Length: 398
Image (cartoon, rainbow, N blue to C red; front, side, top):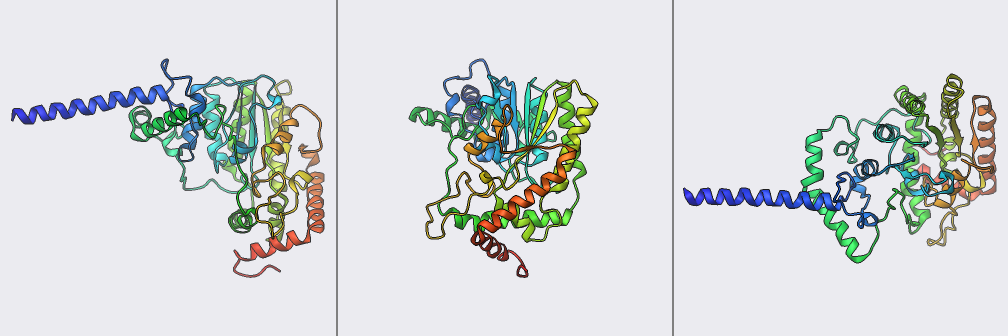
């Protein structure tokens, strides 16, 4: 019996020692930036990763561990394309809080987490085409339920995981390993992905993964038709929260390559140029600005069009190593194009148009004309688009 008690005591002490050791390691390394303490190592900051499997947790960690004057919210288009150290931020500390595959529901949750802890001067919200006119997803396959963003999560369970969890210890050891090899993480300490490379055989990837995704998005857009009341309410809440803190709010309607946009027309979408989305954003801003004319204005900038930056021709079919100029795929623009987007915050330029309710009809017509011009300039690209889309349809295109 005494031997059993000694064994139990030893076992309990071993578990306690492991928990204490894990706590010390995880809070010192703070791999996801969610456990800031006075003894957290500043030297490890360049090596803390924003892991794909813990993307929401890691981006929330930026909010929890830092003090920010500005932040950018959106999908991987923001994560990859918008540099938080761009001159448009004029000395402000800016965080890139873009989420992989993050749509408005998650971006709103990230915004609420941010605005409740920070007093920013500037917020940029990037909204992807079709997001406002499709309902919120029913299933979330990301780490959102395990992150600080989920209000339905168990706070105690979550904090135990961050402080003594095995997954956190694995991330801590990986962080220390990168520091020993002097290999900085893929993202900057401001949350910006530093090296989003072009994929091999980009043309093949576009014809399969990206146009199949475009097809599903277009079918969902056609099926639902109208605007999502839930998502419009989320944008209204973001506007109201920014007004409460006297924060400048800039909303970007994000760009896609011209072939993505033409796919909606080819698939018979009744609103292939997203007139409803544009009008809704413009009217939300106009209403907010009229209600508080002395507050920082809500601005809507539209980059979804056939501008030359969005309309480079496809790479040659016989050169699998070549790629679209300025585009990683049909969805993700390179930081060079992202720089041009941010340039519009504080200067003139031909890329992007500011939307108001009065300009929507002319803007939609301009986009239609630009995309038609692209299709006429590059008939082989249009043929490629039609053949690719036909693979995902039950009946051939007309």
